[in-house]
Image (tube, rainbow, N blue to C red; front, side, top):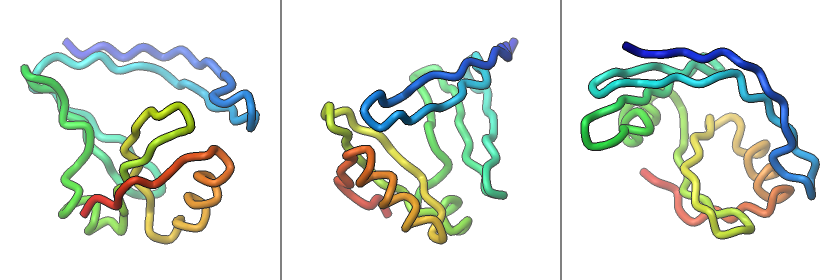
Length: 109
């Protein structure tokens, strides 16, 4: 059975730039379970399988149809992330990357 844990916790994600975020909870999925994250009237899906996770909706179809661009990025500590950005928010995203010293490695199409 899926378990939802609701426990808010605010923390500093980057001490150098004083970036704070709020963790609003956890979802524990069993295999073959799926959930949708909605933000800015867009949806991203995560699906648990017996081999791991589908971490995003289809990049070249669903996310593209919703006006989203998918980036492979790397932070100052060489950690890599997949970021999904609405096409109308590219300036905000680039400003964020500059401030947080995040390098765009590739636009995934």
